[in-house]
Figure: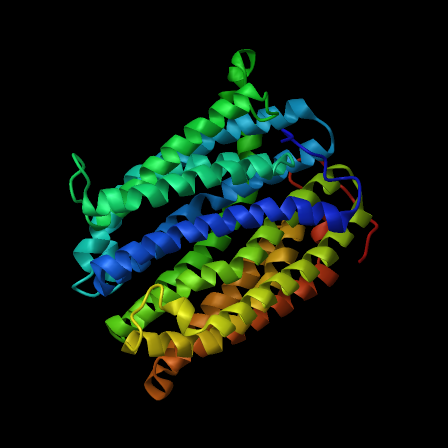
Length: 464
């Protein structure tokens, strides 16, 4: 299991596939973990509890998205310095980023605990689900620093070309989480019955154990991101690096905030139609996680590969990475969509009772929304490429237009005429617009002249 790997040489199609596969498996494991937790909650604690976790997880995505940009900016810096074969710079970036990111995670945890209950009320969480959602959220917010650092370490590892280690320790985390869920939810031996809060506690414990084990492993393997005794000074904040993280990270965090805000607003609209529609939407989101997995995996792999090749100044490979990435994302996403259509109610029966009103709504949602994820895959891959150079504003603008200017207003505007169907149709239209804008910017935008540092940009003559 290599500690790092150069992504600047060899076959792009094979290299991207091998690098993306562990990321895909890790993402699938993470979604499987969430789905199994939802099965325990939905089937044994009821639809009110499932609605509570769906609403709470949307808020968690919003808060995690606030720190996403710092992680992504650090990953790109690590990827570029790795491609340029500058190990000292890689360690400087990792040290400062780790300290800065930990501080952000603690601040976000405090904010989350303060706004937890009023936010659930503001989102119009159904009365039956409100106390459950608050109980779930309080445990998750206590765990937030650990959750953040776990995601940070895995992301930086991918920046140095190591996608296998994050997968192996994700496997450990998921196994522990799945095993502890029934123990903490229902109680076993000296462990009291904790209900929905037990599901959150299982996630907390699994992340702590896996993160600790991964850090120990990285030090034993002398990973390039491990800081040893004579390098601990690098944990002091380097304000030049922090300046880059903030300048580039804030727009990328804003992209996730836009995605998350869109999700919060959408949940608020869905909740107006009652618990059956809300439960159907929550079940649909669980399955959508799997549909999005190939796009996210290929997008992450493309971003790391492109960043290393930007650092190595191999622009012909950057263009090839984009083309191969779009092809992979389209084929893989399309395959999952077809599989879900074949499974139909059998997939939704994991979360909902057969013959229920919520099941009928879920099937209706599936037919309208799922094809739009092909557009989503194209957008994610092209965004991953352009971000690898430090071009961060165009993806933010694109997401803002497609989600907040198109999707939410469309969902709101026609609910009186079409009912909940107006919500579902807003997905394919807004996704198609996002993909079109992403393609136009990739072809004609100035992303190749962007840069991550205060030094002059790395110029490219590539026009593909």
